[in-house]
Length: 301
Image (cartoon, rainbow, N blue to C red; front, side, top):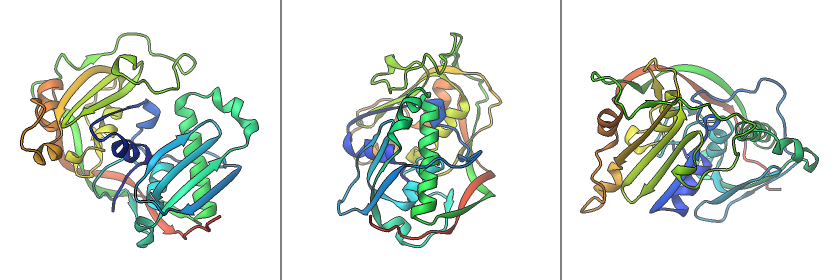
């Protein structure tokens, strides 16, 4: 099973050498997104089979969501906030072959009269509402029916190393920005980050900058890296504060494909322990998963 949340898949294709993305806390919750009331819905939507060969940059405005060349499983992952991973995972289970092999272009719009109220929401709530709308779209256009189960799965536990947390893992002491004052746009540099996580790649080198980030958010982020092999990551540090830090490492798979690395930083597991005093331990833990009970190819209109 392949798992590519839309934004990450697109970013790595469009910017293969230098790429950056910031995620706010709302984008990094480890738990599956559950609706707590009636699902909101898009006003109109178009789903067509893709004739392309790769994804293109997605568009998300206050009234429109457009994605190109994505699978039904990609859309389910996006709708339920499943962390991205380049490897197989067991978080969305079931579905016949077409769910992973057929690609679609999606263009969905909400009622324009709702745009002013939507623009006043925090970025976290905007993303949540779009995801819930996508759940509604999947239920209507793909006839999707799912159930939720808890299964014992291989995971990595994020824990404190024997040496204890390093000074680089500094507790955030400044007042946290509120939803009213926080910009809903993504920063383009680490210096522009007010809260959340910003990662920049340059060749094999990777640098994560965290500002007022919880270790739950860090664990969710780490689940997306190839070194993790598709396993969920759970925070077992018992540290509940918000932290500032910079973590630098070398991406192992890219380094293995080149004769010489352009980075002198260690691999991810080593970097976590040496720079932050954290470690990842292979274990098993109860993990919530999505089981597909029913899904149909959508009509092409």
